[in-house]
Image (cartoon, rainbow, N blue to C red; front, side):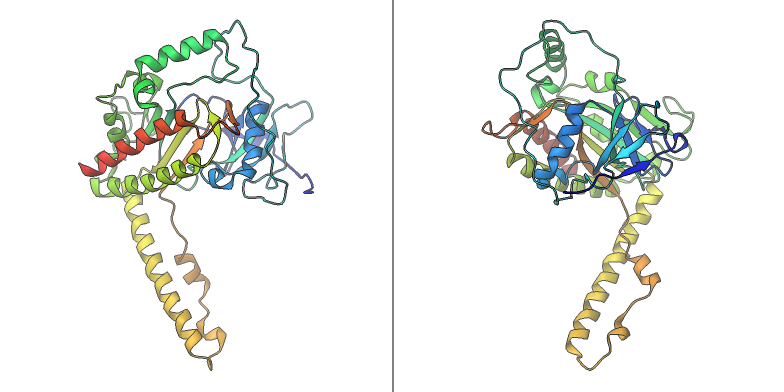
Length: 364
């Protein structure tokens, strides 16, 4: 059994996180920006912990480090189980505890809440955008059906109405929010903030229909003002497609239901930085090829000393692979494993639609 550990976080180490694309009020970050604390209910904590038993799927969600108590009644908040409850930790028994319960009672009434969750608990996750100079962020909400089995009837009706008049219904997804860096000379221009970012709220995604939703993805990827040429954009899209197909394959092997979950796209929005990253990748590949050849020579030359083939710290630094893009599935407040019910066709429908749109973008 793995021992529980605690890592104290001072108030000064928790700051408001400003790279939020859609409906995630109250998210905090540590000072380094590497970790995020997302307020949530116990159901989402349980789901993240249960993903240890589903490693293929867990690869496509943010790394989970543990939980955070937001209450200040006992001084500084603490992260419980940090680095112990990682999704890659296989030392604990596989957990199948988080499963949908059939026959749950349906509440009669429901009052819409604001976006800030009333809770003193938070999950501590990797910041998927960490390491990017100017992260571009896109939140795509998956599913035509957006409510869980235990949702009140009024909430079901409201969400069904939204689905019917947006791309959620016919395509199984809609753009929930987007944030793009418009370039070094764009600050303060029309609809652009002083930080150079243009923010697209939920109303933007709801305004898009089947015939023009592609324009939303074009606005996310094709940003000439930020130095992102079509060549670079196509390379980024191609990589996202590889990840999306991998996620689809993982979900097709699972029996689950994930209502109102999202795809989170992030990539380097600074065109000059993106060019530099692609050049660095090229150098890394060349370095790795040289090292591979050297390793082959080492095995063929039995009379040579090992230290003749050692490389120094500078060579090691060159081999650091730059971060260009990442995609993760997020938001699991209404997610559960559902043995015997088959894959989540509601989510797979939306995922397939996104894949087809990105494939079309590569053809233009």
